[in-house]
Image 1 (cartoon, helix red, strand yellow):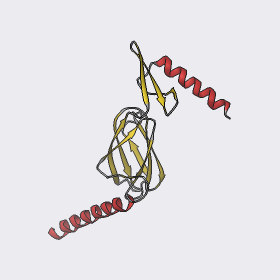
Image 2 (cartoon, one colour):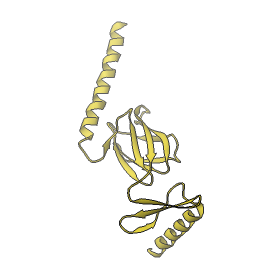
Image 3 (cartoon, rainbow, N blue to C red):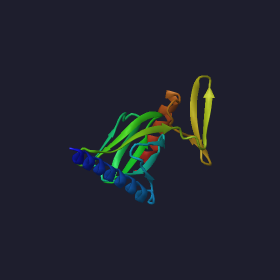
Image 4 (cartoon, helix red, strand yellow):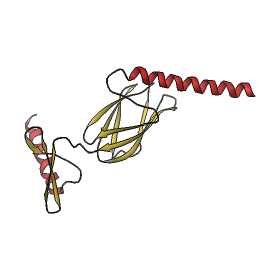
Length: 159
């Protein structure tokens, strides 16, 4: 009985060592090596590449209104911030075993943004280097509608 338990413990440690080795190898490549039990942040309206220690076949996002994730290849996930907040990401292998369980924080993109207040209404402008309207959560809904409508017109004209 003790031998069986010791065998299970050794296999667990071997699996944990393989995960750590996989993280060390994948951290040398492009992207962010995902700590299987860690946390990751991504800016709203931006994407981030996550490298997994082994092949994933299923990705689960706790709150898909906050972030989205897709499998680029079996060991690469593209994580996209949709709105501010916290959620989690779980990656499963082909037989349903967890590969990673990450806390995800979607944070504000602060570089080159200017917040313009008109009373209680807020509008966001991106200045990179020229200033133009930006779509950000928390902006006045009329402003968001105008910016989104303008963007749709420009996209339609470019087709």
